[in-house]
Image (tube, rainbow, N blue to C red):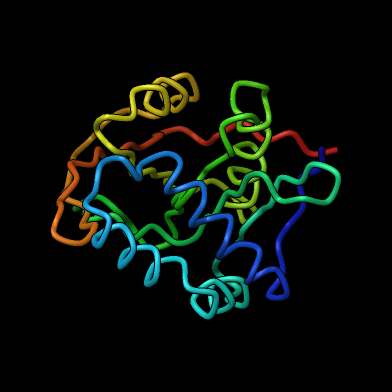
Length: 176
């Protein structure tokens, strides 16, 4: 298993993996047409290529013998909270296929994201998480993130209640 920073050449892989992990995790929550429209827009290959090419964003792939089985994405904070400041960073996505969860790889990917977000020094750290994803909420709480607000996240006609989490202290990074 390896974690590596994705490049624009990985746009197709990231598009397919993003659609698969989102569907595996949340697909049961939405009418099929809403899910399909969301995936077609949010995880389109061209959109992933733009993200992978942008210097303010970064994506990591978890690979098992060269096959992408997880991904994490980060960039400037875009969450709707009045205390978000310029220079604050956000974990945008962290997904692993079900067979790869609970093996420590999510934590390793999370650490890579936090180190990258703080590459220029400490900054505000933010995460949006679905209100019904209790496992993720516990994962983030163990890493010092606390709920500070909420908003509605649209997936087609459905509006998901999302919690906004923030860490007020720098996340410890381990540089070798």
